[in-house]
Length: 170
Image 1 (cartoon, rainbow, N blue to C red):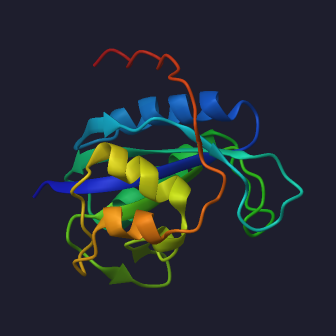
Image 2: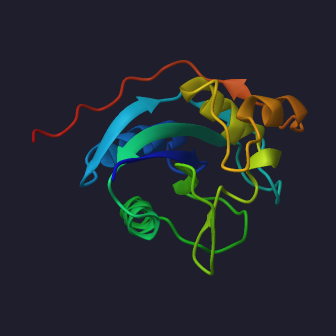
């Protein structure tokens, strides 16, 4: 069965916009998965420790046959390929990929919470989701547009488009 999945992307180290562009290319090549759309990228202040560079964030919409945990495994493998190290909670990172929404499923276990637990508090996640699907609702019926309207401001700034690397030949 094919499921709509929305993935949040973030980086604040080693050319963040380049990191996100390469991540989008990697996401487009996942097995049993099709990239539907990519949001613009946004810059914002970091959440948590402020002694780090601003973040660049975005989101992608995928249609996938991968189960949620299999998709999470793929996301974490891409993070590792980009040099991701988990040294400090909410600390700087080369690449962060979060499974934000997975169809109308709600999951909460020791590895994965979907919809993402902090989604309602993150303008840098909600705005890219709205760019992808202005009518998107969460499994509990809350609209992403309503959540965005009530979300605290984190200094979100839309960045100019950057060229995406071409997909590798199939």
